[in-house]
Amino acid sequence: MKAPIDTPPAVRLITVDEESDGQRLDNFLMRQLKGVPKTHIYRVIRSGEVRRNKARASADERVATGDVLRIPPVRVSHRAEEKAERPAPAREFPVVHEDEGLLAIDKPAGVAVHGGSGVSFGVIEQLRQSRPSARLLELVHRLDRETSGLLLIAKKKSVLKAVQDQFRERETGKTYLALVLGDWPESSKVIDVPLHKYLLADGERRVRTTSADDPDGMRAITLVRVARRWPNSPDGRGPLSLLEVTIKTGRTHQIRVHLASAGHPIAGDDKYGDFERNRELARAGLKRMFLHAWRLRLTHPQTQSPLQLQTELPSELQRFVDSL
Image (cartoon, rainbow, N blue to C red):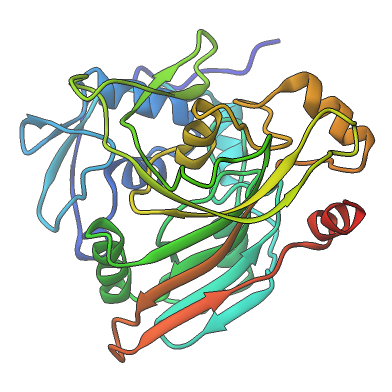
């Protein structure tokens, strides 16, 4: 028997409150439309059905206090609502840094940063459950589900806005460790290639490189430094390179697509990588994508002092490196 469906939904007008000031539009809608698949939320934004102060809006726009958002009718089954109302389990994560305004954790691979798109909950929902007295816990930025490492959470709205402004103005340094297939050329230090987001037939998000004249292309800048090379991989199919990758823009899947487009996909990448090599490397001990958010530099918005955070490779990646 199919789950019953609510009465037909209607257009909603929502006024943004002070607590939501500065949030990305997509994040704001995910919290308003619990139980609605993330892919559907992005679809109605792209179609222009979501209006901000009567104008079309994009997913990465930041809403402001007093904005009026028009939300199109969205239908949610009782089953989805019940699932959305089920609280996430409380969970703490390894703390790299914490003060009254900012929390930095070491996110493990395999955990989404937030719920949506088939994932009931992520890091932020579990942290809120484990810290019920916290007035505010908001993601400052994102990491892919299979990427491990440094993740920033704001504990104050002013800190959230200030650090996100630093990211947007490219005033921070975000460096990752990535193991790639092949011998990365020493001369290739800057990748400045626009990226274009699209959806597969099943609604899954993908990204590809594009030309500078693509109206939907977004500029993306990646800096690469070779940390170490190995002439032979465990599967006997050529060299591997460990890269320190610093991103100056925070585009979706930026590192994965930029490195793959340069002919050196990340080892273990199940979206943009070499699938046959991934299977062979898995047999050799690499069971996940080798991408780790390693180092982060910013100016603390409350003290105005430089803050440098670092977290070492997780044990499963370190073991694989040691085996080389």
